[in-house]
Length: 625
Image (cartoon, rainbow, N blue to C red; front, side, top):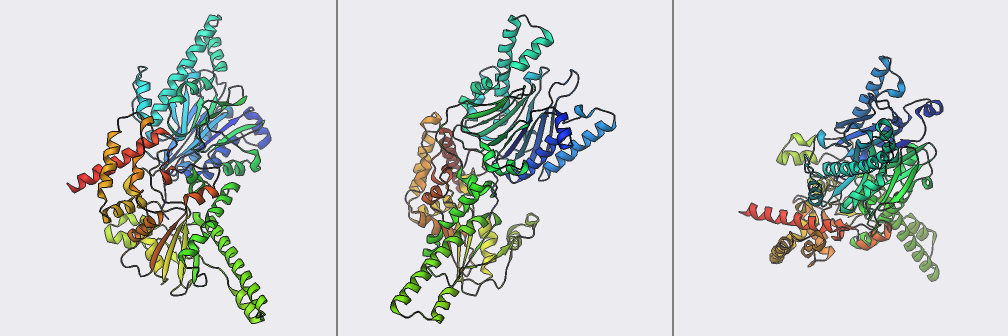
């Protein structure tokens, strides 16, 4: 019910034939631009703070621009960018320019949609980043869906070479690190071809032809700790996309004789290029897809594949539910909640109404309803068999049994965007209770009302509006069901869940420690985290797990319900979370679960979770002082 800002979206297109080919076959030289626009719009859910595109044109004469970039901020950034690009092309053509040399007409494109996860904003932080040089093979555009957990180490490795980075942020540092490696690759080829007697333009062309970006990636990637999909275009036309060794962040690609396409989500490529699901491949962990200047493409294993840590939250919440596998997984998540929900209800389905909030939880809702219907069908069969065996089955009794149905309704509708930011305090809370309209008459007074959500992370919207809204229908009990487990730990790989004190599960555990006179545990965890803060990341243990160890999942869920229930609510409120075991049963191929379990896939994750707790604890101490 609350929007979680999350990892960014990337899109890349490499045309493998001359622009004239697409003009003749598809009727436009803007074929790639149009496709890039569609890819980005289909991924708009992944980043609504800003967007950017980049383009490189091959074989441009000296003195003519061949590398372009356009960026914009705001939720309408995609339209702003492509309207600007369209104007630039039109103005160029009106002045008599040749279409093949118009701005943003090229063979290699990248697009990026941004959600900031570092707290930094502004146009300077919007991808793609660009490195300029008079040698085409030393220029580079860079974008990605990533967050590095060891920025300090990357910074030290760069400064150790004598460089002086302007800013201390992972994207800037990666650009400088990769740029330095690109320079080294250029220098290697310069020395090689100069020894062969080449000079001037011939030498420059040979370097551009023989550049090997895999060498650049192998020089840089071993130090990276984090979840990432790194995308780059070199000014000579080489293109690369690389995925982290644990597969934390997603990447998919398609290639044929006309085009190579990359995107963060499979159905995006499938829809835009009208493909079958099996046509699209997943970029494997530690692997790079490279398209050379001569249009040849290859896959290279830059780093050894690590343990499979593909992000489960990607499947639960972030990616488009139109993907065939994600749709099936989300239904399964809902179905596996059937018996936990029935137990909470005391198996009273006749006086229970089931619904979902928000719309992203609809597929899990279908799974839950499927599970409930299977339970009811089994119950009916058992009743009928019993009556038959006793000789008591009559038409009236059979009709009464068959009349029993699972009651599901569209309870809440979010049809307006109230501007609650104009108000403060109690006034803001009152406005928030009107963000959703409810369907009056959809339940009987005294019914149980069960609503399924895809995640309950902070619980802010539940407390401020949703529970108050649902209580207007006068249910006896409100059961909020989360298709994902309790989010207990920060994410440090690109999702905006970084501060310990924001998680309602963490608040509940801390409240239970206080209630039971166990506040010494909080201090002990702080001391342990502090003691190892200066150790190498490989030696750090996630001690924050100790906060949760004394309590069962049900105890924490009950405390969460208590913390989130406003005092005026008449209905009894219960919260049901998915279990870790059922999560992995529903999504077996994406086992990454560190935000639920604290089992981080890279050493840098343990360092950052401990630091998040240190910041929380020291802030609380300072608040008391």
